[in-house]
Image (tube, rainbow, N blue to C red; front, side, top):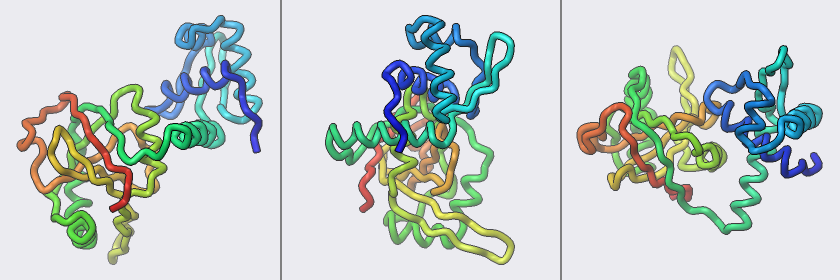
Length: 225
């Protein structure tokens, strides 16, 4: 079991996590890290080196900068801290996430319209969804909520095989977006946690008059029922 890291190292680790959420890595100087964490450059540099030695981050030094990414151990450490905090504060039944509407590539309609998925949505959610998904890019600062969603079991929509391909399992969470009933869905094995998809009986863009770039609020039920 890994020993506890210092509060300074934890502060830097969280900062690096925020910076690497979208691309998986960041090219940054210790000066920039120091500014973002209100630490001295020397302290920030020591913390980065310590995190690298403990295997929590991967670091490729350059001249006055470095390319940094969190390792699996680093991500698991932050998840552990989040889980511990959740236990201290009590069970979390629901969360509210914020994000902006964005256009997808049309893949949602293809997947949602598969017969095996439709049957399970009807059985487990109680309705056949509109054949398409609403893509929401989570706002900055939503990393903890995104990790909670990723680590929560949700309502399992089983995967299946067809003659030519495999469709993986999906988990769904009952939710409300701007007050309208819906479900937030994500592949069980996803590594992308900065974007989520929402399904509903209604065409949400029309029902809520939504346009790309518009802010939305989603209340998500983490309890499987």
